[in-house]
Length: 255
Image 1 (tube, rainbow, N blue to C red):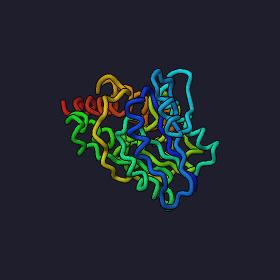
Image 2 (image 1 turned 30 degrees about the vertical axis):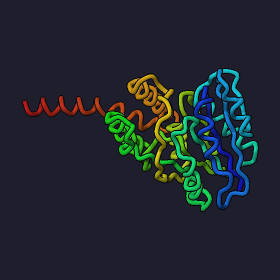
Image 3 (image 1 turned 30 degrees about the horizontal axis):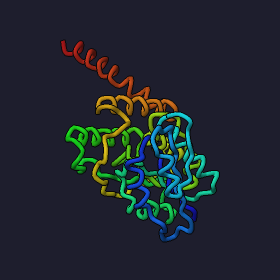
Image 4 (image 1 turned 180 degrees about the vertical axis):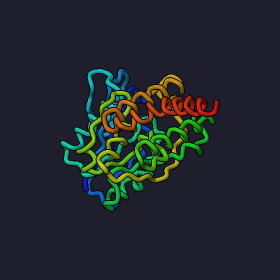
């Protein structure tokens, strides 16, 4: 079994060494582990750091976005003949020690996608508003996709070869909801394992504030649903209108 650990990077020279030095050199059931860095147009020494640790480095000439960086990593992993693909972040928020738990359901042929569940409502360095929004968002995603998604936007994941060949990222902003919706659409087996995230090393770069993050995430998810579940978008969009019509009819009947 060949495992590829993928790390999308954009100006991560400071935190990347923290991630790389903790990655496992061997795992039960895995015969070969390789680490690849997808440098998304960094202007610092990210590439040099990756190469100094012996990683395979794939470079974008300019910054294309996390979604495209992830897809580049998937394409390279498939071409290299990997059996299991693990994605983690370069900011060291995800615990490398949990990769052994992440890959186990794939090794046992029990899952095609395994998500590292941070249990967002319990993460102490998340604000109360972020915990609440994560809780609401996860339940909405689960409802729309008809899956159990305790941490839908976690980027710490393991994928089987079958999943890699069926998924294709359609958005530059991110890949988490995109690949989750596609996995549900293709009836892939999705599960989660609980993890304990590391303390933050820096602020998130996906958005400048929580409101921008919500807006971008919602737009990304709507885009994905329009492709894979257009009927649900129509039903959810027309539902408020139907409520208004029903209210008007009841008001007329009771007046």
